[in-house]
Length: 314
Image 1: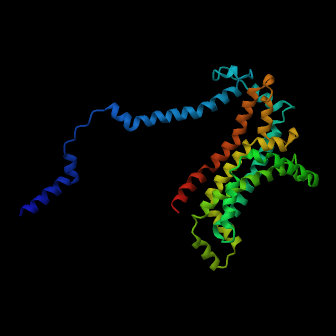
Image 2: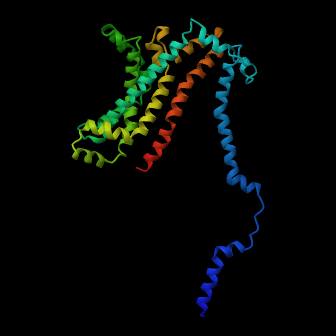
Image 3: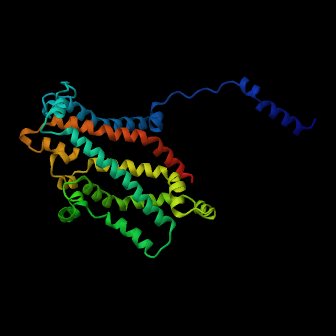
C-alpha cells in the first residue's frame, strides 16, 4: 500500500463519527464575565431599559385611572389606592356622554380607515400601472401637500365647512360626514405614496396575462391586485384608524354639539379647567379608548408581519 493510500485511510478513519465520538473532549474555556458582557450581556440591559421606558407610562395611566381621589398627586405612588370610582363617574355622569363619544369615535375612525384604504388603493394603482400626462408631477404634488403642517389648513377647513353648511347642512359643520370627508382629503396623499411603492413590487406580467385573458382594469384591480397587496392595505387601515382616534384639532373645531364629539375632544373637557380637573376619569377614558386600537392591532398583526416579509421577497 502506497503512502498516499495509507494517508487517505488514516484521514477517513479519523474523520468518521465513531472516531470523533471517541476523541477526547477539548477543555472548556472558563467563563469570562467581561467577555460575555461585551458580546451579549449589554443587549439584555438595553432591552430591559427599553421595556421599562415603554411600560412605565402605561402603568402610570392605569394607576391614575384606578385612583379614587381623582388627582395626579395621589397617583405618584403606583397603585397606592385601587378602586373603580373613576370608571363609574365616567360612565354614569349625564354631563359626560362617554358612550356617545366612544361610538362616534369608532364610527368616524372605522369609516375613515375603510375609505382611506379604498381611495388610496385606487390612486396608487393608477399611478403604478397607468402612464398618463402629469403622472410624475401629480405624484410629487400629493406628497408635497402633506409637508405643510395641519394647523395651516384649520382656518380654511372651517370656512369651507361653514359655507357648505349653508348649502348642504347634512355634510357641513357639526356633522360626522363632513369630518370624515376632511380626514379623507388629508390622508389621501400620504396613503397613496405609501401604497404606490408596494404596488410597484407586484410584477406587471400578472396584469398583462390577465389582459390577454380578457380582464378589464377594474377586474384586475379587485380580483388580483387587492389580494396581492393586502399587507399594505392592513398597515394603512391600522395607521388611519389610530391617527383618526387620536386626532383632536380638526374634530374640536368642526364638531360643536357634545353628543357628536369624539373621545379626544370629550376627554379633554375633563381636564380643561385646572381647578376641577378629574384626572382619574380622564385616565379611565384613555384606558378604555386604547382597547379598540389594541384589538385592531392584534387582529391585523399577523397580516402586517407576514405581509412585510412576503413583500420583501417579491
